[in-house]
Image (cartoon, rainbow, N blue to C red; front, top):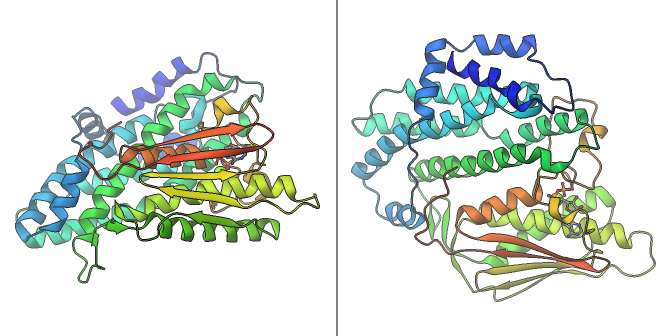
Length: 389
Ligand code: ADP
Ligand code: MG
């Protein structure tokens, strides 16, 4: 069984393993619930070539959709999604340090296998009716995967607790790289499904093409995201510094508002936490966080004391957080709620992936003892192909 071999191969990673890892019986059982033929098919599809979609294409395609176009798009997804999903399922089985056997990761792996099976067992799409059924099915696939990020975070936190705290974070490079590929791929899959499903909305809001807002105001999105971040901060600390947003609210460009919202939300949460913790016990008034929105650039700037030099090389890894591990607070390890202020260490790396998905980037400049600037470069929906990990 090819997929099982991957798990067996994992032992080669495990040579310098700081923890004892073994494949649990529970893991074996779950495994056996997927037939050998399905797992063989996952291997086969996982080695096929992925096809990226240009974002300009998503925009143009969505603006002139006809039944014929929708059928063509569904046929493309019917072939493309199983390839992307199979690659992720295979990788999920072969993670180092026993990460693959963590119950949360097994759960995610099963979602991927279930979705692969749903896609592969769907017959060829020939007419409008097939297309509509297919659209319903992929929407359910998307819903099934809603909680992948917090569930993966739970698995990674479980691993973090097991690891020797003295481990050099560079030894965890393959985990970080895997997570970067994994989440980047997820962003792409959800974008493709989301766009396709949105094409069927009876009354799409004006200036919307699926997830894309053709006239998104980055100032408006930044305001909403800041308010959301402030309410999380208020809940956690009982107070929240002000956030001032500068820029022309009438300036717009085509982008996915949800993506920008997520990035600004994470950056502002980080700034709020830094400022709050620095000024909580002082009699000085906490200085506001400033967001400056310029053409294609957002700068989130705070006077929260900056990031210690020793931590800087690690801020984009998934295991680095100076906040306390949220799982320590939670008795029930089966649930994961990522809408906390901080502690999972996922905010920066995930935000950077969202920026990069559309050809942008995220940079952090810190002045230790003073504050931090996060520069978010947003690329307008250009001709850049989707990054395909
Ligand atoms: P989390 O917020 O869950 O810890 P992030 O990826 O968002 O994860 O941030 C990682 C770490 O980087 C934080 O724990 C914090 O130590 C540091 N950091 C990020 N942004 C700032 C900031 N604006 N000021 C000070 N430290 C920051
Ligand atoms: Mg954060």
